[in-house]
Length: 419
Ligand SMILES: Cc1cc2nc3c(=O)[nH]c(=O)nc-3n(C[C@H](O)[C@H](O)[C@H](O)COP(=O)(O)OP(=O)(O)OC[C@H]3O[C@@H](n4cnc5c(N)ncnc54)[C@H](O)[C@@H]3O)c2cc1C
Ligand code: FES
Image 1 (cartoon, rainbow, N blue to C red):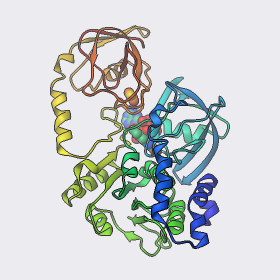
Image 2 (image 1 turned 90 degrees about the vertical axis):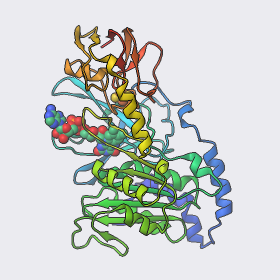
Image 3 (image 1 turned 180 degrees about the horizontal axis):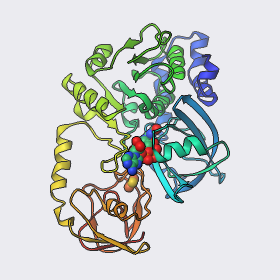
Image 4 (image 1 turned 45 degrees about the vertical axis):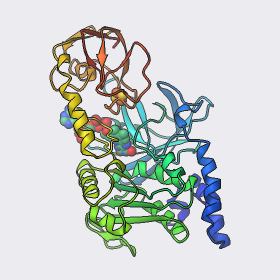
């Protein structure tokens, strides 16, 4: 596939504007001057959470384009409908998207990592169709160019570290993805490419074959454009390649931590992993066994289980696991507390094994939005009309006085919720 087909026009323009002039003019790569220019650009947008265009709650967006990236993965590009530009985000963050499901009349919301560059005027998500899944099928089957959709401002703790990128001699950035887990890696890769040119960046991508792999063609193009002159390296692993899939340097089989360290020739740097849980656990544990610093191994779970945290963006270290276990054991006083949803006029007790008030709402079929189920996205925030709640750790999302983040809020008394 040619470059113009493989890479979206805006990405192509940005890459050519930033980097290709140097390649085309044949000038030697000057890391020092590139660093000073790019670092000052990065410094000016360090804290995107305080950007004046950020909004709270839901905002309407319009679908500008739709594109199939593979037989079951489709990209949707959103633009504002109110004339106010979208704020930038940090590579790796996600959008919470809400749609009305015509079959039930109820709203459905889910989180999707942004797959576009963080300072583009639009947002792009890429959605894999999940058999039997509500939102992914609604998006694939009913949403087209010109349609409206509601979104929340980008959020998430699993993201590119501007701080790490700005340091004098930044450690390597190692992005490790399998399948649809490539989405947050793309926005991190774009952010890195936009910010500085002298950092070692490795993208490891485990795919089944070339046809099923979203964004394989643009990734190959980017690698081809940049590998000769910069620190960007792409490493592709095919578990079941078809006849024409492989190019020189590609590997067959399943990616392991040992292979990553072997390719890198070191175990330094930040590791950001996204893919199926089994894949992430094996890679994260293996990297730490190989000597990577546990505090620098982060992962994002797209988990679709209703009872577990949807988005894990935590260092894969034992001490963190112990901490959350300790918090769990202190939660017993919630059990038995009565929870009332005033608008729905329904009540039930908070039961052992529940993660938050959202579980009580769902057990009663009370309509409450949800997305990440981990206190990040803010989709489930509701007013607390009476009573008190507690959190194992403070939620990341915006929550005002008198509100509760239902997915992670546990009652400490009888509570009444506005839902
Ligand atoms: C931070 C974050 C980022 C994400 N980024 C992406 C991304 O970039 N791209 C992407 O494609 N996904 C991403 N996801 C996953 C996404 O949010 C959704 O979970 C996914 O699209 C599935 O949603 P769904 O509504 O289609 O499926 P759901 O309706 O939630 O169903 C999920 C699964 O449960 C099964 N199921 C549903 N109801 C029942 C039932 N009653 N009994 C038994 N089984 C049932 C379905 O068959 C399906 O297998 C992300 C998730 C998170 C938390
Ligand atoms: S579902 Fe995301 S904060 Fe509760």
